[in-house]
Length: 271
Image 1 (cartoon, one colour):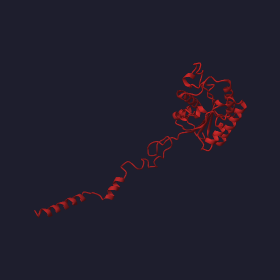
Image 2 (cartoon, rainbow, N blue to C red):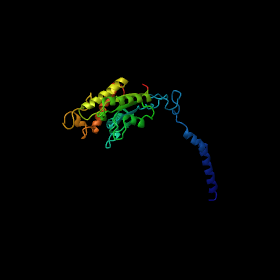
Image 3 (cartoon, one colour):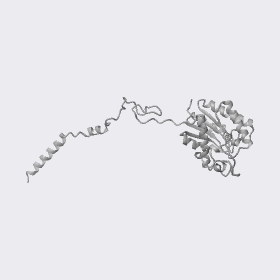
Image 4 (spheres, rainbow, N blue to C red):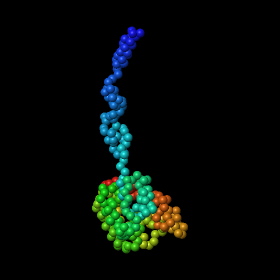
């Protein structure tokens, strides 16, 4: 029995020697092997530029995933139709729905009750809201000014002057940004006063060479909810003025149709 101990020790030493001779590396060598890139990875097949070096919308130099295309930055300044109401968040308006569909990076500005000449409950016209909410930001690809519904108590000259001053200020602030003017939205057949506001805005847009969208002339809404005629009952809330969720989606449909006609669904700064 005493002779078995030396034999067992010798056998263990022999096994250890065979394991070492089989090529087991040191811990450092094993880590290096684990960290090394697998065959076919690392540099690209064409000589290997940095990852993400492809052009926007195309593949990288090594054939990798395409780079992300920059979403257009679009600002929309407006009244309750654009900026929402106490019970309707800006994210629920036609402007937000348009941005989601066209994949814009959207900034909504404005306030319900405000207009070009109308100060609203906050005593802020569009010009004041532009300066406070937008003018300090970097230049967008496009800015849309949408409004006029609350300007009906004001004269043609008052609306014309206020609109001209605002649009001129925007063009001076961001000369390379696309600028679009949209006339008043209405929840029924337009009354004469709304047409006067529309005419004033259309005149300013023409003089300043700004594209103009006219929801009244295009009859986005017809009839009214009280008479039950036209499309108003399908899209307008019980207040007779503002759109329902379905109405906001419908407004977005009409807005996108006009944007496509103007080639402004993917605006670019300086284009």
